[in-house]
Image 1 (cartoon, rainbow, N blue to C red):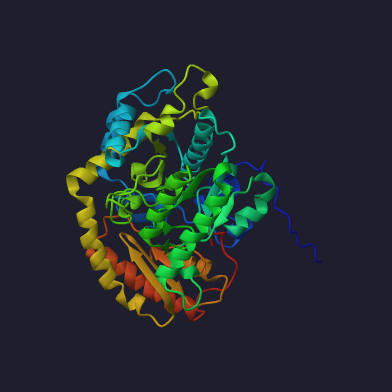
Image 2 (cartoon, protein in one colour):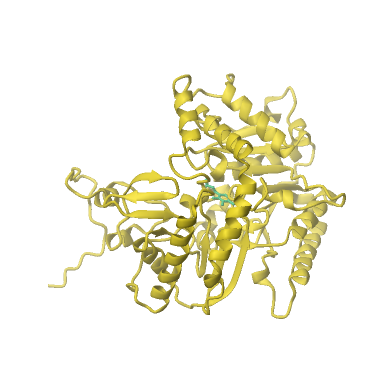
Length: 472
Ligand SMILES: *Cc1c(COP(=O)(O)O)cnc(C)c1O
């Protein structure tokens, strides 16, 4: 008999098998994000039952160090008391209310404090990063329309840029796999060269590469400014491109060029905000001609905003953009809403995050932690199979010399067995840990990574297809 079934098993009508493992029940009932579900047959998801600081604990009691901050969201570990207590306190008062025609203390206080921290205000809320991108794109184009420039409705993104996976956000995201699959749904934007030095041609210095990328932007804007609403970019670090770290001088130049050509600059700080790059916000490391931090026209925030506990995102903008909507006509108002806009519990979590930055001098503590982890990680940096390495703030990345397309998936699985949650992007292995690692945690992280690397490179790990990785 050769009756091998290749199609999915029809399980929809099957009653839940309560004796099955959590992983098995998940495989049947949950459609996991950016995962080829078929691959879960061989590699079921790990069932996590508890979180303790930077550690995740699975059903069998294995402890796994969350070295990617649960997809870059977690800042202070799991079960961080100030956030838990703030949410619990808020639950006793008001869980959620709509934000059209109503308001509440947590959303007002959070908006005031985000305004004071960034110099931008008028906070508009959603629940995830992609929605923040959508809001910034819509707000930018609509503001030009309200100002009598309806032709300015196109966008510029950067090569390798990532801004989320809804249709609008995908149109400014340059990940070929996503773009190809959804191309007919997208209104493609211009994609300009990335200042990530890994794209520099042989023999071209970092300065020359940055200058060439600035020139490409200048040329594009000179030709297309009349139809361009905004340039959207990830300040300093292109995360999904494998932690490509680039020079702040590119950002400074981009700000000046956008001003010159009447084009908005949208800084997507979703991954890099809240201290990740060493400053509260990454764009603050780029200075203008007067030596002051540049001012974007829009800042998108999410991920670390609530310390990785509740979904929340915010878009902040300038008085000028806000003024373009200030009108008696409804159609000139910003036409956008989400049911959970400004959720009170999520806002309280965010306020607890801001309190923690203020009270615990998180940025200074991170500087000391980063120095220590960089030192401990030297054997990794010097590893003969590491082609390139880079570090900024609380992000480290090493490009591994391998042509094995399954490297990321194999590394991810082998790392789990070593008690580490790590998900390389292509051949870029990176750490993006919560800010609360102890010395022992760091030693576990580096030693486990080195062991896993040896094992994967020597082919010891099981060679096989693996769960789809969001970005691999
Ligand atoms: C994660 C991410 C997003 C999308 O956020 P989601 O909450 O996953 O929709 C957008 N931009 C950047 C830079 C990100 O890292």
